[in-house]
Length: 123
Image 1 (tube, rainbow, N blue to C red):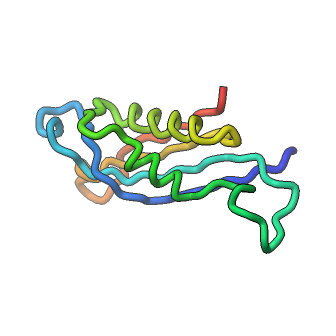
Image 2: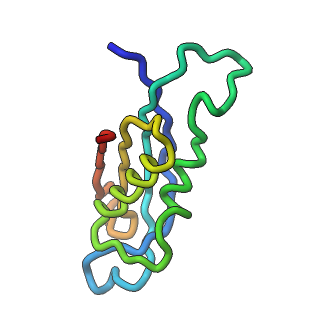
Image 3: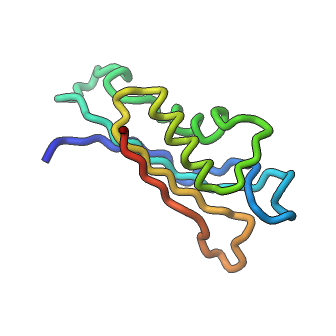
């Protein structure tokens, strides 16, 4: 089995224009987003290994916030996840796979987590 490195940002909350119901459209709603990116690791990580040997985890957070197009309403949270995956693949050729988990916080009634998980492999 080949080595792999998974870089993660978990439980990041951001407001996104999304939803299919009339009460959801036109206003941003809070989403809890977790992202895992699989990379091919360096052969070895020494104490002075530069960031270029991995990926900046802030890129993951940015893909779920600043990289989302402003003013665009995503009907499905699946489309939000797909956009995040596409952004991370475009940013870095070393990204082999992306997993995005999105929980819709506004529709939970009893603390349950309602949402999706999308995993995309580089094609």
